[in-house]
Length: 135
Image (cartoon, rainbow, N blue to C red; front, side, top):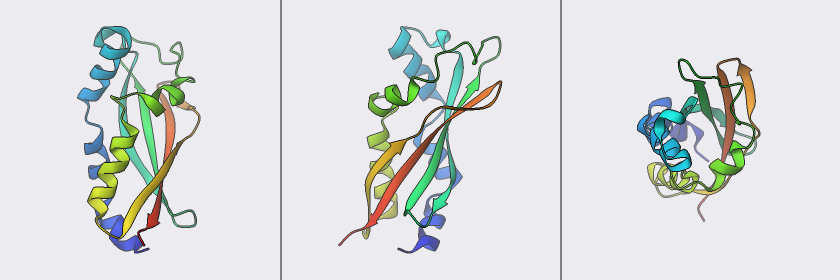
């Protein structure tokens, strides 16, 4: 697997484009019936490539909104919600990565980790995208 090529394609800018800022409001509107009820903003970030497991290490960042309380919100059940929610669309994220990488590399699956509290205003949900050489 050509990791140098993968690193040149899968950049922080590319990963951020897969989950634009307006998706946060769409998510809370679908979940609660109003975007203003959301306690945090959601963004997607690249955390590296794990060569041993041939996987991309991504993270959903949940950043507290002004005047809201991230710690008071139910963020620990979110991995199960994110896994199947059509606005989060992890399957679509995987398909976009596969398309960007072109022929020769497939996305064979993904795995969401548990919510990690990094500080009082930031929680993170790890997302591992598994790659395989097409053959």
